[in-house]
Structure formats: C-alpha cells, structure tokens
Image (cartoon, rainbow, N blue to C red; front, side, top):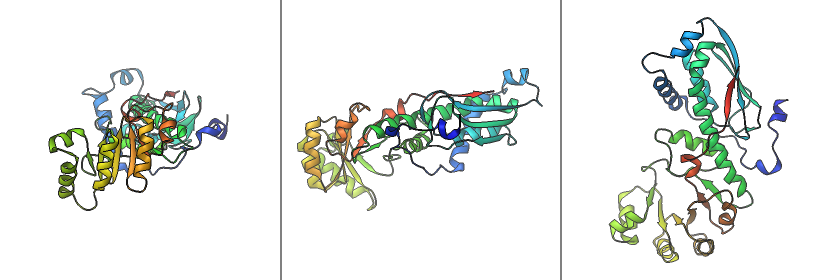
Length: 298
C-alpha cells in the first residue's frame, strides 16, 4: 500500500488536518531524557543487554494499529537517538497525519540494543500524544459545521502539559491558558471567598497588568448579566442547559467570548456548538484520552 493510500481520509475527517509548529528541542529533550532515565534505573536494560550482542544491527518500523491522528513523532526520534545518536530515524509522515491500521509511520535502523531499550519510552510518548490528538479531532470534526472551537484545559498530566497542549493543536483544537500565570480565571470558590462577583473582578483587575485577560465562571444567566456589565473578556458557562447557553449567546454577542464546559462528548458537542458559543472546553481530551495503538515491528 502506498503512503498516499494509507493516509487517505474519509470526507468527514479532514477538518482537523493542519500543520502545527513543533515544540523546541530544548523543551522536548529533557522530558525524553528523564523518561529514559526512569526506565533504565540503576542497572540499565538487563533483558536486552543479556540477550542481544552489542554489535547486532536491526531495522524496525513504527506501525499504526488503528485509525487516528499522529502526534509526538519528534519525541520518539529523540528517544531512539538519545540511546544511540547513530540510529537512523526516517519519518514517512509527520504529526497531524491521519493514520490507518498497518500504515508505516517511521523506520528505525542501527543498533538493535539501543532500539529495543528506547522502544517503550518512544511508544509511551507517541501513543499517548496521538491519543490526545485523536480525541481532540473527534470533537473538532463533530463541530465542523459551526464556528465554535474545541479547547483544552489545565486538566493535564503532571509534567506533560506543554506536550499535551501541543497534541491538542495537532488534533485541530485550541489551547486554553498554560498555567496560573498567563490569564485570570475566576471560579466559584474565588467568588465565594472574595464576597461576590464584583469584588472578585475588581480585585483581579487591580492585581494584573494591562496585557492579562480576565475570564469569569458563571452557572446562571443572572451571573452572566453581572459579568457582562463588569466587562470581563471571557465568560465560562459551567454546566448550563442548551436553552440557557442559547440565551447566553444572544446576551453576550459582541461583548465577551463565551466558553461552554461540562461533560461534553463528540455526541453532545454539535448541540452545544449550535447554541452560538465561541469555545467548547473539554478536560478529558488530555487527562483521560485513550492511547492510540502504535507498535514497533521488526
């Protein structure tokens, strides 16, 4: 099967296809190095070192075993080449490619020992991030007929946030704030402790610079009306009904960006998008995405 045929897509899956700038090597390399060190422990790869002579050469293929969206290929390459810089890693496709079962993603040639030792670390990154991209694409494709975009949250696995948010972009989604330090998000507990919405927003404005945006979480239309009157930049509609979201979209048009959240799935996302909200925030695309099955075949 040709590469072109292997990655042919049905018509309804092309909306998430896009090229996303890769992450800097200086960010990727430490993450992969730490993962390899965790795996190698204090004595290295006992199994491979005992079974495979040091001079043995091999050629393997990274192969997709199910449909999905590829993400994290550069991390896999780094894993193999950190074990042995002489390993040759030839990518047949790039991140963002739509994978079909049996498609060759990359070939690896060189030291069999290095290849087998790096295998699990390379696949852990590749399978997980491809799973995040695939989950994101499932939402992006479901709402392709609407202007709403799917966005991730801070519900990421510790230490993997930048990587997971990259995979979200590869899957056709947008990124929410990367941390507590790049935007204000006033939630119900902030409001309760501050003594009210107005006081919380007033304190936030007094404590930030002019470049920082303010988002406020609301769960009623009355709270939305107050938020709009205060001039916040973004309003998070938390677990609102479709009717309330539709009303909210009419109230906020041109006054604030509306973001919907609350257990949204590929099945329910189109109805949410149809209400007129701007963003659909989903945590499970990062914290609970199923891994994409990818293997290393000799």
